[in-house]
Length: 114
Length: 112
Image 1 (tube, rainbow over the protein chains, first blue to last red):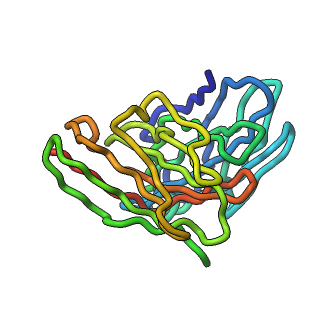
Image 2: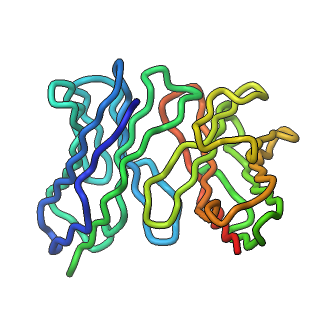
């Protein structure tokens, strides 16, 4: 079945550092890919998405590129802030969209120190 | 901005009791979902619902679980006889016929 693998956390960085959180996936067909963020005590918020190969999703300075050849969707940000501290989840959905449930990775806890 | 809401935010129940978790999806959305997240683990899909019936369900969604859309706004998850291992955060989500699912803040269920 479908699966998502993320780098284990926690990841601790200093403010203004460059961030990469690795995500690879296994799926049949051509899934859509997502990054969700969960701030302490809150629910999941969609951060960005990509629906086909070579698409780049971007939002709030974060970006990720759908790489079909390496089955990856790594999250990057050029300069992190303390407010980016959260848990980040990579997820995939069936290319059909609609009623299909998302498959999530285990999440990566990001800690940004001032 | 429209959002998914869930009630209660925290539910404590005794093992063997029935619980109903409630969600109000975004009003023009057509697809509804329940997920759970056991503490420290990943978010797991339970069930999706469309056109007043279950569209897809995972292995977790056994006969102890049921979902219902009793009126035009609410979407509920019922657990008939709770077990200790049902303790988790339960998230409701909704979407249009697109690839974006919008999640509610979750209900923390504690089974004692």
